[in-house]
Image 1: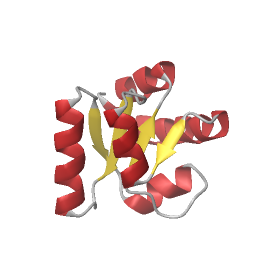
Image 2: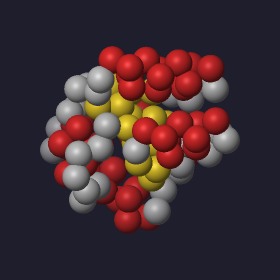
Image 3: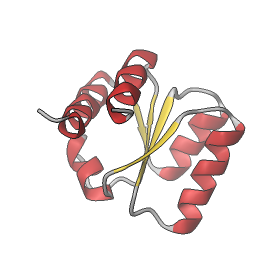
Image 4: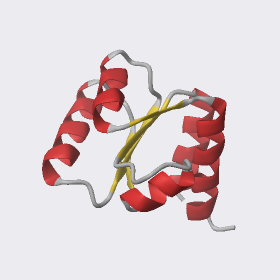
Length: 102
């Protein structure tokens, strides 16, 4: 299993554990409240959404990764297309960040 597939399966585990926040507004609110340890942004997000998420994560010092497209992110968590996903669990966030840094 390559690291790309591995982080997607971890996202599915996060979803089942109730440790995910999905959607732009909910994720940005969680970033403001410092309730997320990591944010994933789909590479095909609109420029406005990407800028808003990058700026908010930078201001609140939340790690941000641009990952695969919205359909792959949504599929990994058993939902429709998702552009922004926040991970609450520090353990999951640390492991996913390590896989994405490879």
